[in-house]
Length: 94
Image (cartoon, rainbow, N blue to C red; front, side):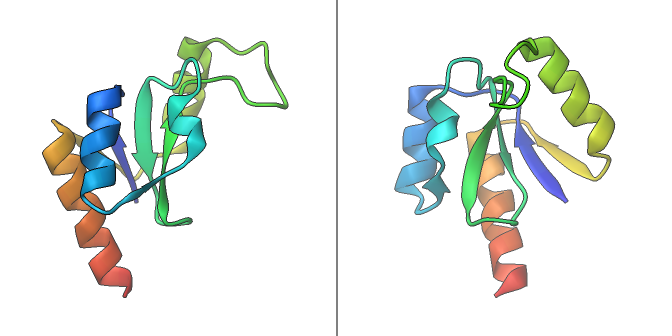
């Protein structure tokens, strides 16, 4: 399951960090418009920026790719729900 917040800002990242959840540096990349957590790593990652392999992909193309490849997704309404879903997932795996 992938947990997604369809928003990304300094204030949101600050709230996530203050809750004790780690943030990958990619959350601050230009084009990282969404935040994701899969549990594959212990960090929140950014979504929307072009990766190193295909730097020509637009933010919209990257979001479309993500949606096509990820079917088991929980879309959170706000940062608090995002944090709570991540903590719930972390507790299930510990």
